[in-house]
Length: 385
Image 1 (cartoon, rainbow, N blue to C red):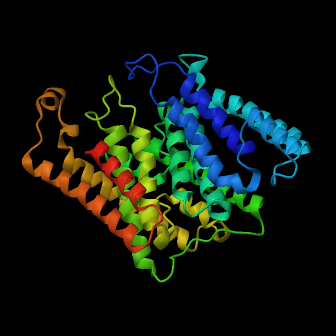
Image 2 (image 1 turned 90 degrees about the horizontal axis):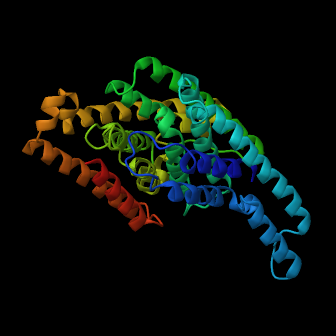
Image 3 (image 1 turned 90 degrees about the vertical axis):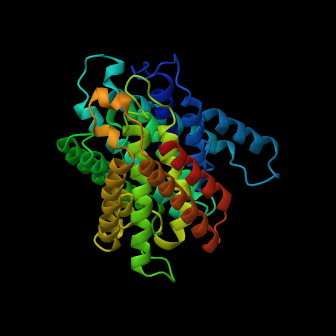
């Protein structure tokens, strides 16, 4: 309750109260309600079986009142729980306000430096992601885990993106470094923050659910090459979506930015989570792999998964340059650029490949969400291409 109320309050502050960025032409962004509501999707599915996922003193009061008025109607919490829940939820809101001041200093002082704030953003966002993954593994529902993880990734990208870019993934930072979108000095700083966050979140959820523990390994009957392959492919899809939806000058120009970038990025997890979760666990992020393999310090399967994911990040950078050669042109050439037929055909091939692969894996793995995962794959690739 404390942590996911923190996430909810932090996302409210970061998406609904911040100053309008120069890239946003409208008076208000169009995603703040989606981001705030999706916090409940993430927390509700991740820890609903533990605390009920109320994340709001008003909801806690209502549930407690139901328990008082209808004591025999079901396993509703008693009034005694109400006081504890409200105090924890209010403390979560207080923590969100403090962290928001650290991650968004320009909301108070417009000329404040953001170098440290961007690193803190990467730590906070990655911690939230990995902690949610751990909670889903140990207490969530196999039907909804991928959706919950996609939701928390999306909301934390929306919350931290204006400050740090919302990488929250060493493979994503690697792709952005390879394409020259961010300098390598920043990539290395982000890697440190992201990996520390993954380790810290892994220790936190392990302590919360002890003696239960998460494991990272190929799922039977699959051997490690199959698991490594799907990790590389869907990490490449994730990084490719980041590059096309968040880093592309044409798809997300600095003077007229799109507002779908985090939605597209987050829903790669819906696509790949249901398709590949029964093969590799669907990490698609070295920090997640470290956090899930925390009992081995990432030194068992975590390192192998991380190497596959970094390879996927490199492949994404190569494919990005292949479908968007205009990103390296001068301003005049960029304005006049028209993609050639071979570039259009390559784009169609990549999008169709990921769609059909996702559908096929969902069907073969008897996924409970074939249509949901396939729709997410199609959406992500359409937004990207």
